[in-house]
Image (cartoon, rainbow, N blue to C red):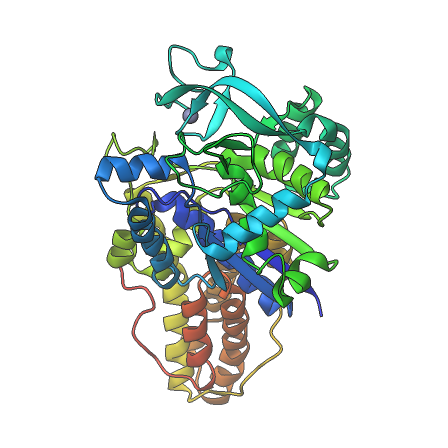
Length: 475
Ligand SMILES: [Zn+2]
């Protein structure tokens, strides 16, 4: 059997989820459903990044214990599973004991010569959880626009990334680790070609306020060190499977099948550079594919709390319905780039493509089928249309949907030419039956994108076809 392990990046749970998180979940879920329908054995892991300094500061600001804060927000992220109909198998939280033990195990498995201690001085951006060089922080502002920069001087553990530049260059150039889209692959290769510096993989317990994964066997300081949040966060992809032991880990990570990370463009260096180097050092197989999606703006502006334009996915689903939100994110946000969320555009697409395009066609054909008492046998061996599978294998959700809606308008055209409503009896039946079959094919192809709508149509067009309430009432 073919097999694939698919993961989401784990968000910092220092605030409620926004529409950008919803995008990643919906895209990933679409892939998971697609591969399952192709007959793959799929395991899908999501989770929460709970050990960051960001979370510590958010807890201080809200004046609650850190664990309580991450519990609260992790729960909200977990709730997106039912709100958006996401099918992850596990939601892995990094403050949980098995993850801490797994991260410590990975650290100890890295080659001895790859981890060393040295005194370090640098500018740490808590917003990014990244050390910057002095010339990258202009006027106290990091390249990403954060202002909470701390000047840090301490003794830390470092990872000898400089040893891995050649290895990583070849790995990515040759697509042994395939990065999609190509523009992101080029970005990583150009970053590697400028030379890689060793990076700090721990911080002092004081600076971490005692929060995080303790570095085992660190005798040199009285207070000890905790892991740099990215070191343990990346390990989520292993601990979600029960690493270092367990059947899932063996089955989905160590055997020679595809391992796919779905991530946002802001964290590509961690995934395409740090992570494969850490795994190589530890003698553990690497991921095989990384799909990098873009960011969402809202009405043309960057999502920000200060602008007050954060779109709450729970509200959105409450207003327009789960399937319509899935549709917008997959159809309207360019899969390989950035996109915009606009309420006006949402309504346009909803009325134009869901209510009119798909909804009308289904209602129209169902009525004609009902008139002629058409009875359709159950069908099992549906197939994905070539265009849909080719686009989905390339992570082009938007183009897959657009090609399907092309088929919908073709079918509309066909009906308008054949005018079945002017026919009667056997002629009507003969004309409408192949159209009803084609609707079932389209419904099956909709399944990864709009699973509930797909099922509704398939149910409606099996056995005695009946006219029913509109799939998407106009707004
Ligand atoms: Zn920053």
